[in-house]
Image (cartoon, rainbow, N blue to C red):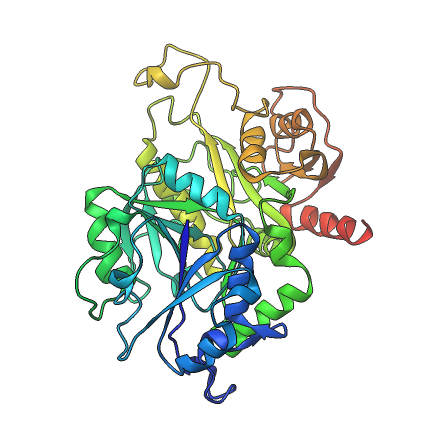
Length: 430
């Protein structure tokens, strides 16, 4: 496996803080950004690295030389004139290539990303994640198989609701998708990847792992603070994660019968702030929700996606996000007009069964015994307890009185905000 790092940037958004340093050589927590990236790759066995350089390229060459000091085999492509983010890709050695933007601090399990790419037989795989500023990010639209179906630039006017899936500036290209021929000025996203989307070969790998750009003074300060607090390393999926699982209706958003229209989604007071608190911690925020409206034929999967897009949009407007959202579309009872037969079954994912929590635990390497489940129904509590989490009730929805089971919460609070505040107080004592 080869890697390439786009390291030709000038760092103009830094406002002259670092004089004439190339952006990838700006110090982050005591050493150049580019060195962090090289060391991260080498630590996971990716040693053949091409640095695409331009502005003050001699500084980068003199620092890294052939890469042996860092355990790498480094070669260089020099842009005599700027070729944009995608112009020099045609000059790369042929073969499957992991590509990083030179201003993204990463701490992630590259092996999982590579396996995703191979399992989907992708031409291009994008590393995507939700973030606290979705309106300021390029958004990726996917289908149920994680295939990218549309690309929404942050510069475009957005009238529709979108899921919070931001392109993080990390890619895997199969050889067939790499540009060929003469090097010329290209934008990686607009001119190289976007034209491939209609052919169905572009996929999105969603992960809660740490991938943040440090290209402005504010973002550099944030990244350095996170490094000091151990956040990037803790989020790497090679390490056991901890999560707060959240029910949807009555916990995050207001109860409104069986929700079948995006406009019915209204956040409960304090819910976004509570989730933003989780986002700032080392705990993942994962929604797990029963959606029998699909089995009953009242809501299509496409409509449900639009409902969740509004939820993501409302949370994002308040600086919060869900690391993932899992739903169960099934219902065991048959005989209703308009029902969808394939979803009428007794499944393992419908709460009070713990299937959604177990699936998330496998996907994100979660230690369930050190995690939490928050919901407003006893079925939420039972699912959490069956999975081994500490189960917490909130009284904003059904008041834990749906009569589906006899599970009793470990703790009960008036709302999500109070429950999260209690969790965070618990965390400080661990």
